[in-house]
Length: 239
Image (cartoon, rainbow, N blue to C red):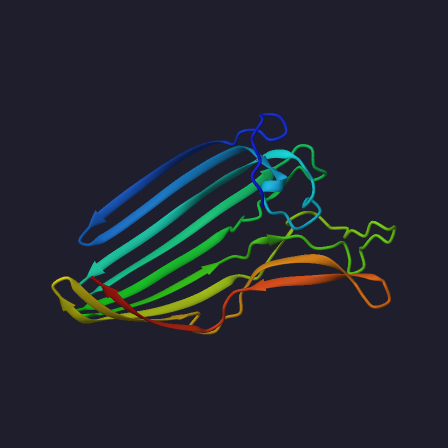
């Protein structure tokens, strides 16, 4: 990563416009919120978007356009609280000078659900949260052997961001207990489990050239995966 000064020529200033329309309703500890939004961002460059495909070393100016809707439901009752949200979004690039001028954004996640349930009683606090989202886009080579052998070994890709990773699912659990509470001093014991059900989630997938012992170049698939079952414990002191 590097910083570059905008010159309104090769690197334009980034400009964005966003509009949203929402409806909010509350009654008897219920909260319902619905919001529709659109956003247009101009002046982005390919080098700022973290491409890991055929456009990784291209220099082009473009924009992206995102539109979607977000729904949120929240309810509080007695010692319990809960909320649920759903987001539907479509996010597309537009680079006029590229071979494929329009294609999905690197972070185009069409569907996302999140929810949590909490319980609070005296010194004890429990929270369980669940999230699910559709997989982000990625680009695949034309075939398993689509590598140039002319001295400038590059991978020949298919359409950019034409495929999507498998969906992401994770459940987390946390507990807090107030051990000591005195004037000017609080001592808490915190515990958490990330990815309670040990789900295997792929966060990113890309391809790189790899030269074998015979000097031949082959395509190597690289996957970045999230943490599996991960417990944490901590002691928190406030004074």
